[in-house]
Image (cartoon, rainbow, N blue to C red; front, side, top):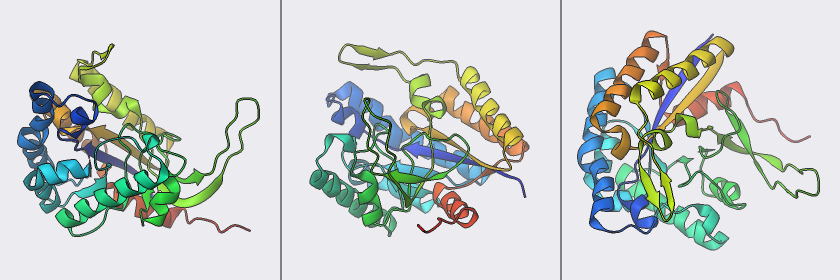
Length: 282
């Protein structure tokens, strides 16, 4: 039976991303604070209106700094996933520090939601050579930081050996499911002006242009797959502003009319496992 799933996901960074990038001053902090203070309630009201559930990847720093805002997400029935504690990419950590960050973030999640996270999304969308092993060790069932497919999910590998002077040696398949993401279906590069050092990301795209692209991504999935998943990544402090939240509502309306099924990432992972059980090594 055909099924075309949309996972609306939110990286609920709060102020952690700005502080982690070395901008702990009032103006950038206020940009991040807009997320829990203003945007999150708007988004929760929108999802309640359309009776859809979403997945939120939340740094421990956000949970501890804005517990009421995160608890509201939990109380509305949305998934809480792991997004680091300090919103720092695991690529920057030695193994022990990466594990400490993973444990600390998960303890924050359990305190606010009553259970440990089952999904992880990396701050900065990159993983260390130790990440997959640590996710499995600590009971995660899926990651959503990689980009090896657009509408299909897959089991993540571990232990690749890459040397430009030799053919790639791909590692073993693990039980960890990958829910792929893409920069093209992330609100940040399209919309948000960012200045870091000498680099400037202008953002400021027209919401209508992004909406057209995102609808086209769904149309192609529906045309070419029997069972597929399209993941959108948004940030409350970005997509919770007027014209962008109106764009999100139009996206929901359009895709629902075409038969899209909106559901949480963890539920989608369970469906994938049932459809694609991991084959044991011979």
